[in-house]
Length: 116
Image (cartoon, rainbow, N blue to C red; front, side, top):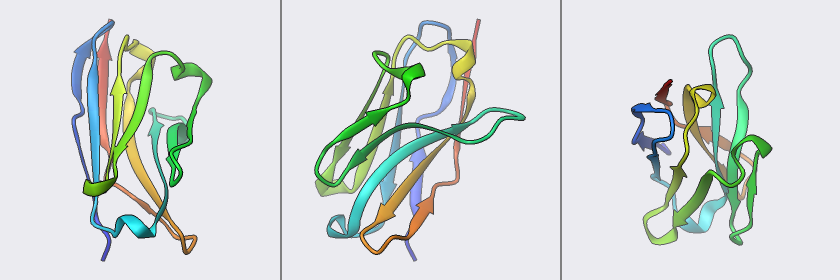
């Protein structure tokens, strides 16, 4: 069974930085796309950033210039470097992996709290 293990969340002051990691127990050859989503209280889950098998990245407008998604293919790990954090970035951040068969898997989520 594929598992996604997330780490790196926490509490940070506005303007600070955090780095999230998500390690997938799946063959790198089976991964089509990896991404980060977030869900704030009483809001829908939304895409933050994603990276495809070919390395193409995509970012939500509200994080462009502040967040960077990257991956270590050999480790099957995707990262989200978050800089210039704002209180409105407070949410539970989820990792998602889409495999080449069309199935998606979610991580358990990691809390990010940004204080003003």
